[in-house]
Length: 125
Image 1 (tube, rainbow, N blue to C red):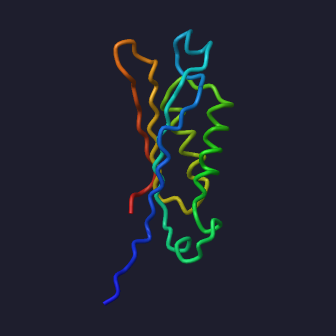
Image 2 (cartoon, rainbow, N blue to C red; image 1 turned 90 degrees about the vertical axis):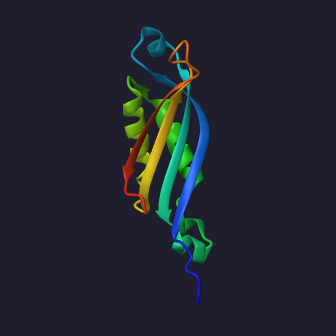
Image 3 (tube, helix red, strand yellow; image 1 turned 135 degrees about the vertical axis):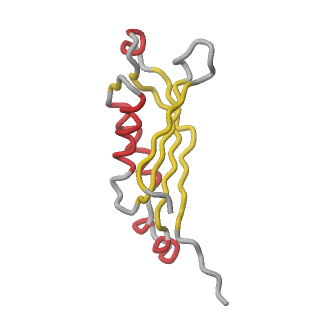
């Protein structure tokens, strides 16, 4: 009996460190601060596995660049808004079944290492 190969692939982009204008405090609005972005993207990769061709895959380099462009050119009051906008660019590829983003703001709280928010869209397979 042949074993069936799972077609769901999980791409993880970890610790994407960017500078962003994000927050509601005056100091946060005046100077960009570091955010760490972690993405999880699930899609059916059966065709990519068969063809070995990037056109059949979700191109994680293109996803990273789209997030870099978005964050670098935008100003956000809330982490929730940033997360929602990132999920929009991540799910432009119709093959994406599920995506999740976690955004850490290491400088947001004076007594904590970081504050983070996670937001997801789609259905896990």
